[in-house]
Structures are given as C-alpha cells and as structure tokens.
Length: 216
Ligand SMILES: NC(=O)c1ccc[n+]([C@@H]2O[C@H](COP(=O)([O-])OP(=O)(O)OC[C@H]3O[C@@H](n4cnc5c(N)ncnc54)[C@H](OP(=O)(O)O)[C@@H]3O)[C@@H](O)[C@H]2O)c1
Image (cartoon, helix red, strand yellow):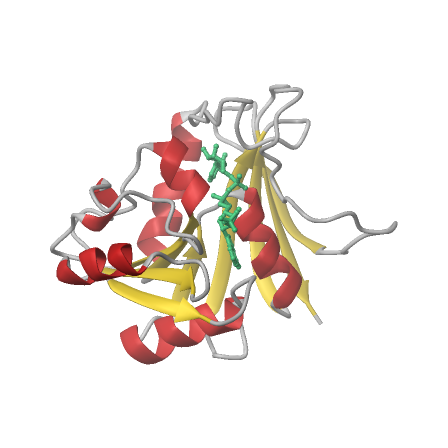
C-alpha cells in the first residue's frame, strides 16, 4: 500500500533476456493465459496508469468491458495525439499527467474539451505519489494497475515503499531492444532488492509467473 492508502500492482510480460518489446516496440502475449492475466489485473483495478510510449505501440485503449475505471496517461511533453482512442471513451474517467514546463497549452485545451482531466506537475519526473493522490482523492481509486512500460514501472518501483510486481517470463529471446522490463538508471550491485512472494508455471507449461514485493 502506498502512503496514499492505494494498492499498486505493476504487471508486465518479459522475454528471458528482460525485454518487454522488440526493437520496433512490438509485444503481443504469446499465450492466451497471459492475456487473461492482464485482463484479470485490469478487472482488479479501479484505475490504470500507462506511459505514453506504450500507447504508441500497444494499439490498446485500456478500457475494461462492463466496468467504469479511471485511465491515466503519463505524458509529460504531450506526445500523444488528441485523436488517440485512449481519449475516446465516454464511460471512463480519463486523466493525463503532464509536466507544466513542457506540456503544450493548445493540447491541454483540446483535451479538456473532450472531458479529459489534464493535470500538470511542476516536477519532472512526475512523482508517483502525486499521481496516486490525484487518483485516490479525486476519483476514489483504491487499486491501481501500472500497465507499463518499463520506464513508467521503474518510477513506481523506485519511489513507492510498498508495491507488487508481477512479471511473466516467456520463453523467448528478443536481443537488442531498448524496451527493458524495468528501465532503471545504472544501479550498483546488488541493485534494488525485491522479495519473491510467489512463483508458478503458467497453464501453458512454458511461461513462469513471478510475483515480487517491495516492502520495507
Ligand atoms: N510486455 C509487456 O507487458 C508490455 C507492457 C507495456 C508496454 N510494453 C511495451 O513497452 C514499450 C514502451 O515502454 P517504455 O519503457 O519505453 O515506455 P513507457 O513506460 O510506456 O513510457 C515512458 C515515457 O513515459 C514518460 N513517463 C513515465 N513515467 C514518468 C514519470 N514518472 N515522470 C515523467 N515522465 C514519465 C516519459 O516520457 P518522456 O520521455 O517524454 O519524458 C517516459 O519516457 C512499448 O513497446 C510497449 O509495447 C510491453
């Protein structure tokens, strides 16, 4: 649980060599059970947070059928086009976290016309606790899913004292790709240590579902 009293889960699927997409940014679940794990996490959540680079590559709009959720996009410089389907829903609450010094004013106005709540942070990187406090106080969120990518995941892992990380390891090697499962700056050995709380073989018999917790 974060300081704001929100439960936070990060859910990712990764290759053996720690990549969440190939060099072109492409990742599709390799097994239907992993896809279902992702949707299960979506159903658990009342809010999801996603980094803008994930929207560019994933093709998803991060809505959950039959459920109203709050969808939050971290887009400090306003990279995502206002016509993106992420902003289309008239069912969900939609929030964008931008950086006040770099977020284009016109884009903010355009999105507000679409009922998107564009919230500016004066800090870069945007503090995870700041985002969680907005989701908790303005939208009543209790369960927040961080759906990637690896850069967004790192900020939450770094800053929160209590967070769960679920990584499904698929039996593939993707090689030289910039899309790491956790994209952290260089850390000295032994790095950031997490506690393994569960591990199991996926129903497909080929993927391993690992759950870790950072809790001090
Ligand atoms: N396999 C999987 O489970 C999975 C899941 C999700 C995504 N993906 C793949 O992952 C790739 C994208 O991952 P990624 O790590 O490159 O990108 P990402 O996490 O989707 O987005 C990263 C960008 O979001 C902004 N950002 C995130 N948190 C921030 C913070 N706290 N403060 C300020 N800015 C913040 C930064 O933008 P600026 O650089 O503009 O400052 C950062 O570069 C895509 O190819 C997608 O398909 C795979």
